[in-house]
Length: 427
Image 1 (cartoon, helix red, strand yellow):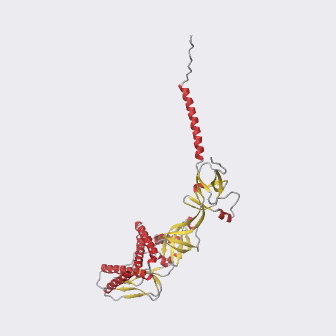
Image 2 (cartoon, one colour):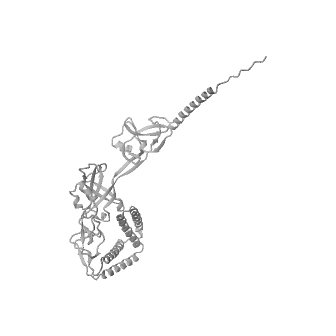
Image 3 (cartoon, one colour):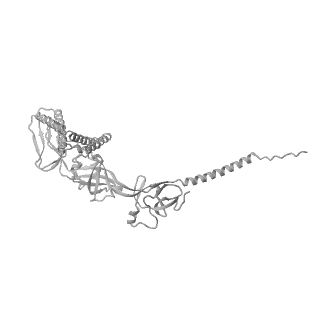
């Protein structure tokens, strides 16, 4: 009689349990392997020496010692000097015509035409007197390009005062280009403009009254209503609160009889509001390089005469910088966007995420072969997303070198990575 075979069976629930346990162990194993692999994924960069330039970006307000000049109602002015030109003692600077039988609109039209002719003649004669040649074309083209883009930027920003000044600079550069590339034609153009001006003056049927200076000054054609408000004479004894009231005041209504203004002294001031975090870095009596973004990026050295701190708000002050170069500010609008050079910072540039503190010491991790090592650094500056740290040579000169190895040029800085420590070996 044949034996009956016995077949061993397992419950489905037990089989499912075994499969689940195996799957969990596999997931744990894969997670551990992935974590190990991920921790060894690092980013690096070579240590290089850079020079970082530090600026303070602020607003400035132009103050001058100015006097408005006036003439009788209905007068037409023929300017004998250029706008902003320095007038010597006993020098004629303008002619006053008092024509009869002209309406106020006709007087305004003739004055506008005469002023336009005078400006074009001055620009033309200035270009001719400079003797620009073909060799100057590179510089002239740069001036055209710079003033053109400054004009466009000012116009788009809605700053019409700056746009007007940049437009005049652009026109002057174009005249210089014309002179450099066709002097003879430029001379004939100048003569034609002068003939038009003389004919206009003859048509007024009025004997001119010549204005002669009693003392030297710089003469400006236009006024802006801030002459008595932005007065440098008022700055000497003004408090921070009084200065704030000046720079926030509205301009006065122009006098219809004004023919221009004179700057009585060459010295002018730039009033710069600044928070404590900024003005604390400045020293009274110090000389600083100031760049004027709205003035064609011209840069001059100015002396910081005084820092007026508000009694009501110690966190804010007004810095009073001065210059004796009035010709620089002659084309400036009252309000200026400026930057003040604070200094250069030379060292190694490292990302902020690469800086670590180990046992109270600032430093970075570097990769030497496949080994992580710690290098000490001394932070001397910072920017947007990075630090500037001392070079090894600078740190040695300052006596900061000790037993902790210092960062060198061309070291391979680890900029990102997990679980970093000195002596770690990467697989």
